[in-house]
Length: 389
Image (cartoon, rainbow, N blue to C red; front, side, top):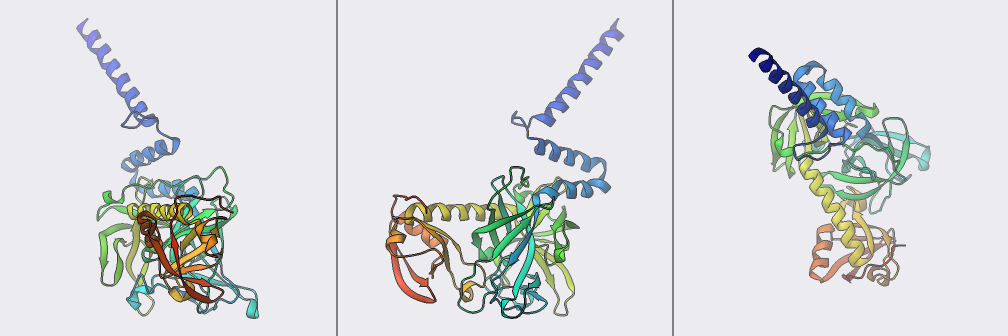
């Protein structure tokens, strides 16, 4: 009788353990229901312990729907150059040797004076609204001299569909750009981005992207060090990895074995003879998300306080000057009253200046660039937003 009772309790315990494990797959630690993607990520973590050899294959397949191929078509008067071009990275990297890793593959379209430069890279979908993070040098201006450029941007999803995209924000010093799909589909799959502070030297990571225009490739390495910075790198919070980040791979995700994005690929350092040093860099995901929130804040404040739709100038735009590109102006706003138009630029200011002036309700002084000429202007913030035209 005692044996039967013990067997009954043993079977009951096994059932409860199985039920608890199944519930943990469906509900998180806080008791909330987990999304199918969260459940799948949990499976990735579990399988990593069971089959290390197959983990990376599963991670690459899991991430594929969240990665896009970015193609940028520049204006006809852009200088074609030859080979690979780093764009304008002087602000980010004062060291000439390290600038070499910021390269985007170049292709050409058209003939004679109508020739157009096509650059390409990788992007990562971060929400269902069609927001994409990529490297700023992927979309860097190839314009000659003191000229604005609004490049044509297209992104290609994993299933082969193409969509037009626009630049909604740029943080040149961190080499980060924020794009948005114009007419987003309803089936976008955003990547999971977690606190990159949990990544430690020695952790396995994969660099995913489109090196040399070849779509959906993966390279394997480890996190070499965190907080990489110094005199040669003006942004102080890079992740360093030995995973290969080749031209065209930049802007893609650096992911861990659970399919979580811990960084945005920047590039691989090259020797003066063109060989790889095995040193790659990525923006930590925590920093990338902070920069994205800053871009969103600038857009919101510019619209509400000044009636402007703006973004930071792209690397190389207007000769690399600091400023804001005006994408749109609200009718009846202080910007419209100051005769600022879409296609103009506000020079010698940036998004941080704009936000601080709006909060302090003080004038925003800048050089108004219009039709190749600049003149001193000042705008005073208002809290009465107008309808955008």
